[in-house]
Length: 324
Length: 262
Image (cartoon, rainbow over all chains, first blue to last red; front, side):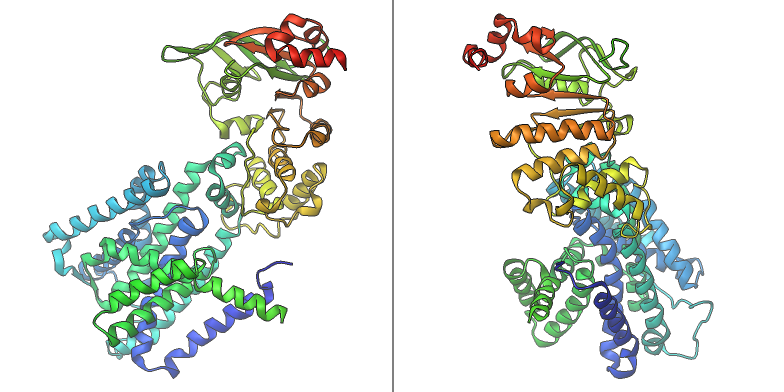
């Protein structure tokens, strides 16, 4: 009677997707494999972003702030502090983002809807101008270089940059995505996650049922900041650079775009959205200089025609297939 | 109805002013265990303000409101729920996209201290779902557990709203026009369910805000009548309906007479 695919089918789908991603470097051209890395990064960031948006009902227009914090933390750690361990980088970037998120979240979660959106947007812009203006600290518009990290202590010095990225680093990111995906699945399907959904659905009612609305919005915000920073760390390592554009508001907009494209109502929607967006953008950029126009048109089409995104379309097709 | 009943709620000389407008002035009342106290009065008499004070949503300008001996001025809904008082609203409050089971589970989760279990599996929590089914069964919702709340009938939504409040295992429950928007035939059904549910759930006292005087007469053990921000009468139903002046002041002659004719 449930409209969702059966649990075993879901597990099979996920296992298949992970398997395809695992063999991809051996089958696809290196160019396409390098595209998967930012898709991994955004998939991780959006897992967190959508805990706040899809689950808790708070739409942030400033989460690129935390992606940028992850990227700059990685840059500072690798090129200024000599920290090369990828595991340490991921952890420290996430923790730095959570610390930075505390004041932002404390102020922002007092508001909802457009007020929340505008406030997060403002914090994002504030950080962007900080990165831009404090040249000595941040490198201004050129940013800070990011050096190659080690994975479990192994430097992979024999590999060139691309071979490292589409080889060991690719698998490290895939593993990270799977682990953080499992963790987020547990959070969303925990008693805590249930309370978040209640807050999204009707905060007033939730309060009278004993749900500490503001505290839980705050916690969801911190978790989302952690995930975004991990995504930012991967992005920075992939490009070898942390630059202020990462914190620019259009980048926050892209996070929203990807989530809507994939479908914010579904757990897997943002993941699908991240991959779809990266490949769509890359194909459009290769095909026409008016790629922004076509990207915008795609978003308009999705919102009007398929408000539940690609996952909404997929689940409709799945239901039809089950009935047939 | 023993005379030594435990005192649950106590309001003493409560006054609430909004600028120059005085919504309540010198209101005192008590609610003890095993009572069903109806708060009645014409529109604008101060019922909503009183209810908001009794549930700690507002702070009185003067006077004190105590729940189980503690001042509850402005404690807010979450603390109120933790201390053992639940509230159901006149307008139905539901979680549209959540199922009946999930809605009740929200209350069970917070009541049983599971709120901050970030990585625990909700699905495999057998004790939680047993509790959810138990509450749903009291309200006749056990056949609708997997139905999304927005798809329920108006009466079922109302029951679910109240069921989720009961899932908090409150000592006192405040029902704000629990039968509003329900067809007159269903009103007694809902009230009977509520009273039975209260007994089963161990609710000690009910505060009922209600316009329908037939329901008040049948289910209240005491009636507090408000008029223009003051307590006009605080009596048993017999004493209340036995005084035509009071009835006329509160509900108007027509209704009062129709009761006499009935």
